[in-house]
Structure formats: C-alpha cells, structure tokens
Length: 190
Ligand code: SF4
Ligand code: SF4
Image (cartoon, rainbow, N blue to C red; front, side, top):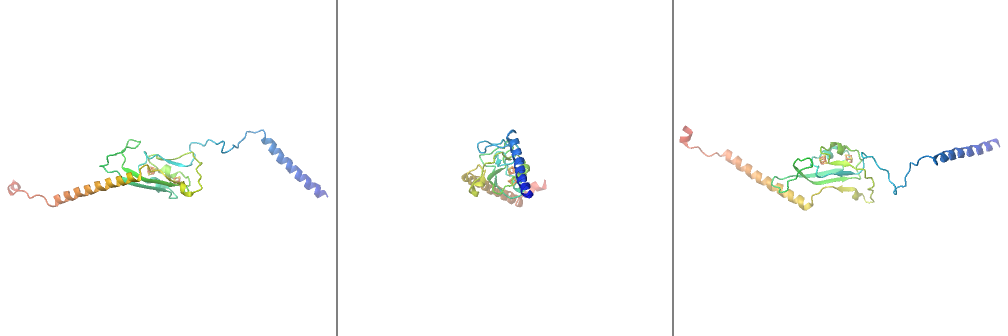
C-alpha cells in the first residue's frame, strides 16, 4: 500500500517538474522559427552549395586534385594564338586555357571547402544556399561551363590547326638546318 502511494507521488512530482520547465519557457525568447515561412540568416562563411565564377577560372585543375571525394570534373583546351576571341581574366591576365567542362556532383560533395582553399584565383566559393534538394540524383550534377558544344568544337579545331601549322614550320626549320646551302669556294677562302 505504501509503495502504491510512493508511485503515485513519484508520477505526480515528475509531472510537476515537467510542467515547471514548460511554464518557464512561456516567458523566454523563442529560438525556433516557422520554416519555410521564416528562415535563419546564415553566416557569410557557411559552407553550402558551391558557385563557380568562370571569368576567374583558368582550368588549373587544383580543385580537382584537392577534392577528397573526386566529385569535380574539369576539361580544358589550350587557347590557340590564332583564336580571334582572346579573353582576359578578371585579374587582367590573358586566358591560357578554355574551360570546356566544369562539373560538380553535389550528391558526393562533403562541403569540406578544400577546393576553395586550393583555388589560386578565388574562382570557386561556397554560398549560403542550402535549399537544393532533389528527388532525382542526376539533378545534383551541376554543369558550370559557359561554352556551348559548338564553341568547344571550334576551339579544338583552331588549336589543331595551329599545331599542324606549327609542326610544319618546325619541319621546314629542321630541314633547312640539316641541309644548309653550300657556300661559294671564293667566299669560303676569304
Ligand atoms: S567542398 Fe570538398 S568535397 Fe565538395 S567539391 Fe569541394 S573539395 Fe570536393
Ligand atoms: S576553380 Fe580554381 S582551382 Fe579549379 S580549375 Fe578553376 S582556377 Fe583552378
């Protein structure tokens, strides 16, 4: 019988403790928000979706090497000196490589920020954007390149033509060195 009243008191007192905590929180500032109608402002250095600024990217591949989960793919084509469209980076340096492919698989990305630290031109950065969930994993594969497939083909063609021209020039120079014109005997004696 005594045990029965002890159990009743124990249940009642624990309810009082719980109610006391609830009552206290009626008068403190709220820390929860009504998402998605309301959102927290994230700090500027929050690591969320990555953004690439193509005008800064020189295709150096440092981000690819730094990425621990191998989720960045970069492909480049050297800019041909004969290309009528010679571009200048944001820092004023001429573009050496066209970035023909720049893709990130956000389904694999662990938001470590190593790509950002490895980038010498500050081309890749985290943003504060965190609402990009998808039902289809393929939609998390982001393509950042700005050149169209036709433009990539054109850049490759221009470079191939320049290389062929350069090789031809090299062959002629080598042939001229290997077979110099004979000097006249009277000139040789002088
Ligand atoms: S944040 Fe980390 S995992 Fe994501 S792309 Fe950059 S290096 Fe790779
Ligand atoms: S994002 Fe930066 S590190 Fe990556 S290829 Fe471009 S310039 Fe290099």
